Length: 138
Image (cartoon, helix red, strand yellow):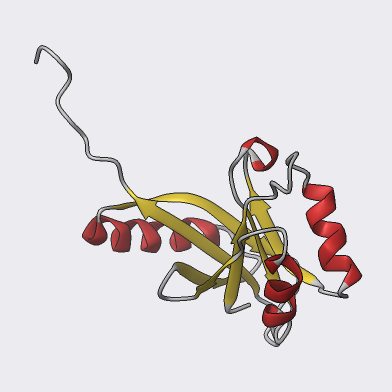
């Protein structure tokens, strides 16, 4: 769960099911998925099984513009156990890193496939924070 792919499912009209059918036809298995407002112009984010990243990128290249992201560079990857506070610790860590970089958390992906130690992967995707300007007339 080390690479994430982000794509707007807009092959006119926006249709997430169509995008998923393209991946299924190429036998690309998804181990994490997420996003918001997906059929309203925002990105669908997913993680293919290890080693299927290029197959997913190739499958989507014709009708979509997928972006391949890397853990530690483009998003924070945390491995969580099924214990209280694990997601909190991950988000707090991402927030600390974001403060240094002027970024804010946009969304998270929670995996469905545990690693060898039984932990679940969570990817925290952040974007540049809009500048906070003083209100007009202040």
